[in-house]
Length: 92
Image (cartoon, rainbow, N blue to C red; front, side, top):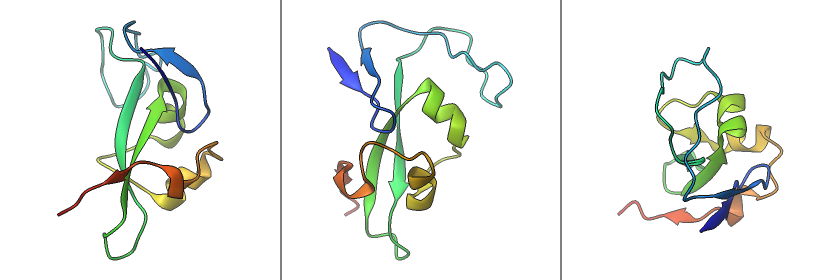
């Protein structure tokens, strides 16, 4: 199954594993992993609007995420998918 990075738009085959190419990151991944990763993205000050941001390894590396990212962090990628079009995460 193919899926796109919601930031840059690159299409990846999810059945193929990739080695994370950024060895200097604080993440240590030696085994091949899925080519796209999803992180929670908070879009409101009160914590009521959370979205799922799916990123390729290159976009993930650009933002150096922690446990989640903010809408401002998402916008900093100049994504092809606006925050409002990211899939909503149910918080209740």
